[in-house]
Image 1 (cartoon, rainbow over the protein chains, first blue to last red):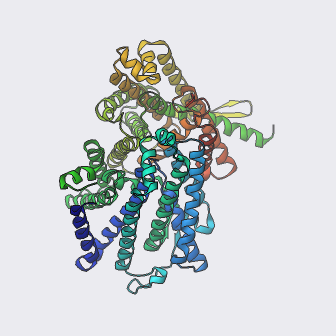
Image 2 (image 1 turned 120 degrees about the vertical axis):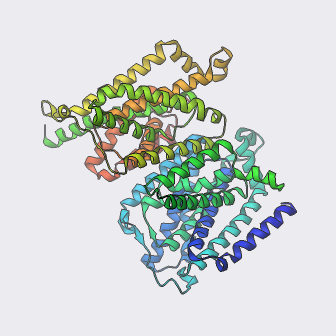
Length: 323
Length: 291
């Protein structure tokens, strides 16, 4: 990272740190949404952007993470800081199973993508009928007064949640930067560019791809824990839905797959786009269901047609910073 | 025969018949993938639009779907042709995830335009002469399902003959086998890809016209039908035409039996389980070519 990028990052970081003082709760909730998708985008990017394995079923890891922590909390009173370890473990385990099966049987590309969708959908319908966890009626966490902060049980104000997700994002960014320039990162990129060549060079592609899916699943589970305690309700229809997986991958694809800033930039653009579309629809009085998503879809189409590699590579070239 | 067994036979037959319509829908996906190597993530959404078009033709002009399917299929052929040649073509050589995003954006636009125009309520088309069932000894066969299945099967046979016996069909198969070789012999690849996409869209339009006789539909059903089409082609073999029909029947029966024995809401769980099993044990599908 060169100096220009460093100072840019410092300004952005400082701005994000003081944001809760500057804005009201509504804008803060949008900022939380942005940071949430930046986080999940980074997590997905480890598997797809770095190692080149297209997962379209990341809602699986998100949902398992969310449900595990929420179930421990609501059934046994175990707090999120203890629960998140089991969340990550179970999510990692499911990622490991998918990875073991897919990579051992040589399933890649489109087939891997379809396998991940199938596993997520299978789990979604399973959870719909899993009554101990609320089934399709949903699992709810007890909501308490929002004005006092109980960090231990993650009950508190939006500002608290904001700083938690900001810290998660910061940690995630450092982890990704570190990974990308580690031995694993170079191996992953070799696999992404040409798997057979990587194998010929003696890289155990099976093992390194497995590592990528494990890290990606574990990190996505963390986002799941956050989601469970921030929203206080979980429905299989929402949490495990393929629409959720798509939301996760939109940010990095729009921002730039395989880049460090891409997922963050993409999440910012998409959250902003969603807000602008909502604003536009209400001002113009087009309050018909579907208009907002139509605007969203058309914008996506234009971005993907004109910037197929994402916004960040183009922007980085303009700003003269390294990707 | 006991009542249970008769019931079972009825459900199975109904599953096979519905499955043939599903099979035609999946056949469209399989043709598009087999030739242009594009995964059409907007497949179910396209079918939903064809269902609305057919239902409008019925409501406004009283044209029943068995006749309406001809103009609707032609319309969708051109829609698919246009989509491939103008929008998707530049993406053919780009990475999978970029293609996925493109078709996802198209799917979003389709779903939400339909939602804006027609609203979220479920629609249905019912024809009087389809209400009576055919009695075959102890068995009861739903007339609508039978005719829809026959039409779907005929459409599939017609498509199969087109690929087998016409020059254009053979040329498209050549593109699918080896596009570089096809290009060298002077075939117009872009045009043939567009025709293949158009044919795939035509299939899904006919399937849509038949399906409105069997189910209620809403704009929100697009994504589930896309997933269903994927399950079927994976089970039958991506790119295999007979595989798509066979896969369709298999999924139709699986869903019908799961609805009978367990609960209807869990029926697609078994389809997904079947797809996962096929992906792991035989990723090329039941009738697919070697990967």
